[in-house]
Length: 595
Image (cartoon, rainbow, N blue to C red):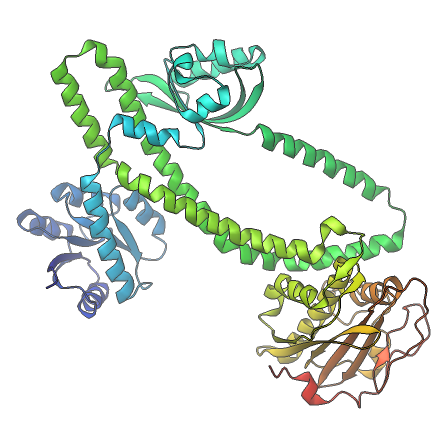
């Protein structure tokens, strides 16, 4: 038999209150629900009854904002509080959670399942909060596994606590470090006066100016390591600053990498400015334009994993505040031990246990692993996106030619261009088992990208609010590996098709195209790789591009084959060869993706 829960709904809006009751009654919860629309009524109910969960609207007729939560929590601190908030009040809800509420829900954005999970979660979280205990040596143990340096400087000078990471970076044991003057022993002489001024200012209460700073430390072997420090001050019961708590991250290698990257970037800028070949510059600009076109889509794909990694780091930062606070209490007790008797020591020990419990240290320590695991998964997702971009551009083999799998190249290009394509077209692929070709992968991927984006934009201009179709087929002949890209867009008019490879020719609106995409594609396939680029089109039905790459590398060979049937070979932009052929060979059925 399920345990009967007692739930108090404090909500002044009748519709919201009724909706909450309905969701609870529809849920799997066994619950007795009581409602009130005033804080005063809630206080009266809490005074005489015990509730497992309180669903609380912060803005009531007789109370508003955080005061509502604070007042209610004083009346019954043992109740699990779930804040319900309207749109636009999420920031206030987050403050409420930070101040003791177990969870928050945004009105209109949760269902029975979400509410049930939130109630279960809140009850369990409250139980954990009420049972948390932490001993000083246990807190120190967990501080030691932190990936940053943690130090406490009594009076802004004497080192009274340092974790394992700090000992590791400095190269000393803990016993060799404790009790030493930090500036005189572990700060390089050239930086010593600056650091002393900073510590004096922190002890005087000027925390905002020196909350973050970068300064080196001097290791045991005489080396300097650059550390990014975050500082907070520790206060005693008389509201006096008695120590500084600093956390530091070793950024030495990162700074070196940034300097190297900066120098490399400057060299690349200089090399770019020295380029004299105007045609090469135009080709590069077209490629950059394509990448720029994809940037927003890639950023969109990365937003979700980056967003929850950032959220996890915000949570970790809050946890660090609690660690620092608890550490400050231990440091204070350590300093007072010589002057207090055993009874006072036991009292202080109980205070520390209670503080650890109130700060939910056990839960935090369990939650840290999950936060790191989630963050690693998010970063892994970002890495996958970046790897697709890297495979697409082959930036490490910009001028190299190597064996190339055309099917894999198309797949990588589709992954990179996914955000540009998914809103306008359905893409299907029909891959055959084709041999590898020797080519520049980055350049061939660029051709696929240009043709796919052109097709998607043409389809968007035809269908407006509907999706069109792009079909991609690969197969091989005796001499070539062939890729056909077929769309069911508006087609290319006969008077235009013989101009599509001319430099700067475009039918797109101003600002939507450079007129170089197909020119560059032609140059890559025909001139650089001795292949063929052919096009067929039927107005109103669609367009087919055919890309032929020689299976064996061709060093010097004039392409004389004009194609068969109704396909026509794309000639040099500067040539006078005919580029448009009859459209009779392009069956409408070929333009529609069937798979």
